[in-house]
Image (tube, rainbow, N blue to C red; front, side):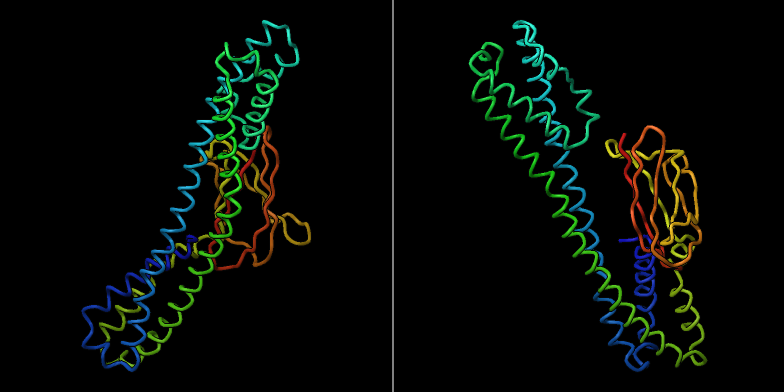
Length: 301
C-alpha cells in the first residue's frame, strides 16, 4: 500500500470503532447500517491484500539471497581450486578467470554472480579429467549446475512478482474505491442528525479526518538506494524533470538517502538520481497533487 492508503486505512479503523457505541443513533439514519456493514466488510480484505503484498516481496527477496549466498560460496571454492590448477600448469587464461573471492562476489550484481558461476562451471568442465585431485568431480559439477539453475529461476521471478504485485495493487485500489463509496453514503446520512445528535455528529466528523493529514503533508517521498546493499545513499542529487524536459526541482538526499517533496504540480515526471561513483538512473512517475507518491530508485556502482 502507498503511504496515503495506509493513512486512509487508519481512518477507516477509527470510523469503524467510533460507530460501535452509537448503534441506537445510526440505526435511525436511512441506509446507514447497510452502508456501514459493507464498509466494515472491506477492511479485513484490504488488510489481507496488504499483508500478502508485503509477504510476497519479503519471501522472494529472502529466497534470492539464500541462493546467492550458497552459490557465492561454491563459486569462490571453485575459483580457489581452479586457480591452483592454473598456477601448477601455467595456464595464464585460466589464472585470469579465477581471480575472484567471496568478498568480490558480494559486491557484484545478481546477474554477474550468475554469469561468473557459469564461467567457473564451464572452465571446470573443460578440465574435468585433471580436477578430481582438486576436489572437483562430476558430482560437484552437478551440484553447481543445480545451484546455477535454481538461482537463475529466482532471478526471473521479480518480473512475475511484479505482475502479481500489480494485480494486488489494483485489487487494493478497487477495495478502497468501494469503501470510499460506502463512506460517502454514510457521510450524507450523518448530515440528517447534525442538529439532533450534535455530539455524535461532530465526533464522527473528527474521526473522519484521522489519518488524512500526513497524506497531504507531502506530494512525494523519494528513496535512493544502493542496488547491492539496499542501504540509502546520502547526498545523491534527485531531479524532477517535467514532460517538456524542464527541471522543476533538484534536491540532495539526506543522511538516510531520501527526500520529501512538499508540493509538485500534477503531471508525468522523470525522476533522475545521480551521484559520483554510481550509474545515473531515471524512473518515470505520475504525480497527482494532493496524493502521496512513494518512489524508490536503485543506483549501481
